Length: 371
Image (cartoon, rainbow, N blue to C red; front, side):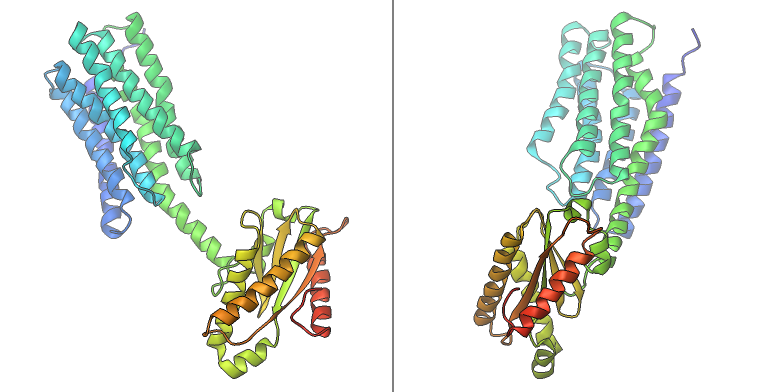
């Protein structure tokens, strides 16, 4: 059997790596004080360093090591609290106390009953740490989040990567495979790879979010917040299926509104039209795109021509009510053209063309109507 690494050396390696990442996260927070998730991750790295150091100087009583195992679990949960802060959620739900208590009691109870240096105590503490790692990693990968980018998944995978190491440590302790503390040795070995992967995944998350926001801004109309033409091309395939209806919307006499009431009033009319359409259209699957000027298109997957016609009339009536109730809006109406994607259409462009032709038909028939 090959010689086993020295536990104390591995601990120092883990402490130095954690201190380095503490410095990275603290430095990032100092540069961006509003991004407090960095404080959670910095605190977790520092706490982990202090816990590992405390294990080297502990008298190894059931109470002392039970507290250290609980704090070890808390240092892992700092990853989760930081991610929750990053997502804009409360970082400290009450249930986070459960894995901390379980880790402390997992070691403390067996240590009190059969001895602090017993395999049963080390197995109990290791089980608590493993459960916290599995919980945190699983929530990072599979938990609810608006966006699960590669950084979040990498961090979650690193935490789940500790689970086989903990299982191997538990098996070694249970069957007495070595005369050393395998519950400490094997996780410390896993640290040498997974600790860096975990923290690099966390570091990547804010950059991924910024990149997503920049991409989103490039695909959005800055005035109304709806998609622009580039955003239309980037819509997901589910919105471009064969059973898709489109409604083209256009403010009647929009140039006259700008000329008589000013461009600020015209902008308010466009915003009111979008707000009205959003209130009427199905929230879960409809999308609105600004084609240019005062012309918009609503994309309605899975809607028939009759359903789209009913929604178009609802938008028209809702805009009239909005104009009547808001003194900051000049008198205005909207004309709409409706079409559906037909077999053979390679994309939505032809359906939009047909809806646009119907829009001009509605205007020719007197405006303030749908065709």
